[in-house]
Length: 454
Image (tube, rainbow, N blue to C red; front, top):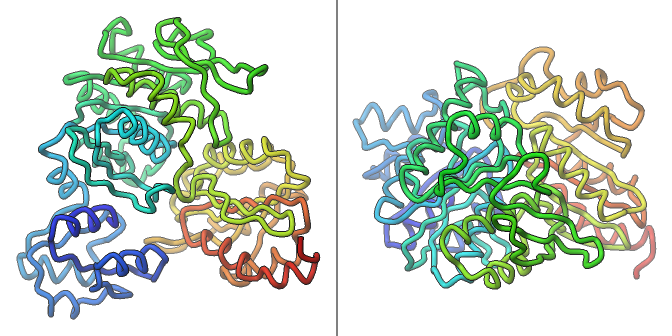
């Protein structure tokens, strides 16, 4: 929603809006000239403005007073995805979808095209660190867009190129047909790309491998598959670790093209880089320009973002909220070899926690670091009896996994008492857990007095 607001503000539309609570992002939008934002939602504000269009996201239900007013007064109402479709209609969309990795992959592809001289536009689901924004209005023919599978709106995009990072059961509240409906939707998304320039698919992911190999000819020149090590699955593009040079060797059709050393850690980010390399190759971008773009890529806000280092304590903020993402992110943190890893997880949405309950238990039982589970963040809906963070910690039943109560201020204060030099504090979740990092940093004088300045 913020990317759409920024994009249409750039082109002169008068933008206003509301949210359930304030945030740093809203402060940024106000500083960028979108002044008329109110907290919380307020029907009278909309009534007084009498706007031409009302744009809403899936997080906004029919019970919302502003949306109800718009319907009663027969206003032009568009879902977020409908407005996105309008924004990209005159360009060639490169649409990135998947359960995990969309934002990092999208921004990597943006960097590859930018350094490849394509001057692309982009809508992504996070703030690009180097640009401090989630939207770019370029002058080129390509529009990189993070295509959201969570509410099936990714099927509204008419992609020039489709990219699939992985497929897992998630957001099942929007898929009454269960996981099979999710898989069927991804098959259609893949077909939409093959109709035009092509499809890029991660065969490292077993579900994506199953769907692509069963529904498409892998000999089709429009299909680029990618993986790590090219074994046992043979793919168009693959990477192989070169431990002597601390790089990854990238191959295209079994030919070594280049070696790349990423700034950001994690096996999963090598896969994201392979998707970006594949997109650049499909569009004929010089391999050395692709290499430069990926090696200089500095990441995106809230994707393993190191937000501060103080007194030899590192604080990392990450958007991970699905068990698979959480496992990947913990593994990436361990690659940094901290003296001690402290993980704080904020589950997102009671319904998601209910659907993924067993996956959370299995994932967190496998970890040996200190893990705290905070209260579940509610973006919409309400609590579900028996589906709580405290019960989750109890069922995991491991001494290193504990429930941590309190709001973000109280969580920061609890961590302040616990952490010591050499620790890496990893904060994960899609809700307001991100505020804990900044609050910890604001307590820097307390940390300094506790450990001594260095």
